[in-house]
Image 1 (cartoon, rainbow, N blue to C red):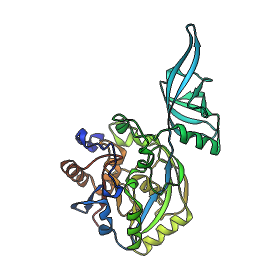
Image 2: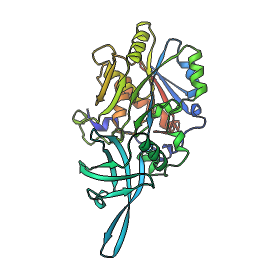
Image 3: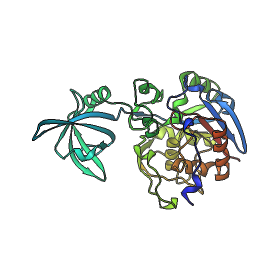
Image 4: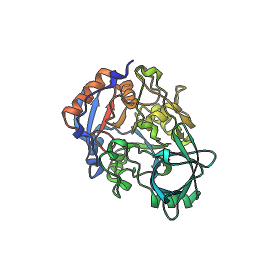
Length: 350
């Protein structure tokens, strides 16, 4: 299967740089088997049924983008260089891996000052990533990072505008709980308290799982034959409670509907043996056409980048021909794309 099978032309103006307000006012394309409907996210009450179960990712995005200064003495006197760092994930040795720009200006042992409270020392460089050791740990680190950092907006938004105070709320789900993600589970950004209450009242149930979304979600696929693509890994957890809730819903005939590709990838990892069980660890599951879904019955997700692994996942669920129809309709109908864009509810044909 070729990478070009998942390409499409996207007008630049359809890339959203701000979310809909309120959250549930975003548009919703419903692909119900072969039929396509235009709706709004708040219309989910018309498309979901009592007994359905939504699976939500409760990861919390950290303000992982930092700007600081590296100071060094030179023949002309003290000089400073601006250093930008995007934290990726903590390592077992207490350092953080990070993307640093410009990495060539930083040498192992040098200190970067991000704020009066937060500094980091470059310990090593490997595979193009810096490994930084911060001067603080635990709650002190969290507080200093929260004060100094900015939300790590995806590259296609960051290229158009810098992160600002609004993104602190906009780029975080209303149920975010466990810190560790450097990208949001963006389909979940469409939910607000009134919508959740309405769904609960009609008999839709909810389970929470955790998958810390990494920057690898934005990595391009660079191979023409997608079978040769190496998928990034991300840490996730499906608790005993969540696994039992999902299993009970399926046994009762209800549909399991993950909100976002992150939740889908996680529950399919936990259900790879055929039935879902509690699971914790790093998953690098790569879902492409031909994949057998053991847990998922439908999916709510945003509109994804051309030639991305997320397009391949959607094609696996809906079929490649149906995927092309859905995206052609979305472009023609001026749906807003990517992280701050509109949503789709994808219900495969029986």
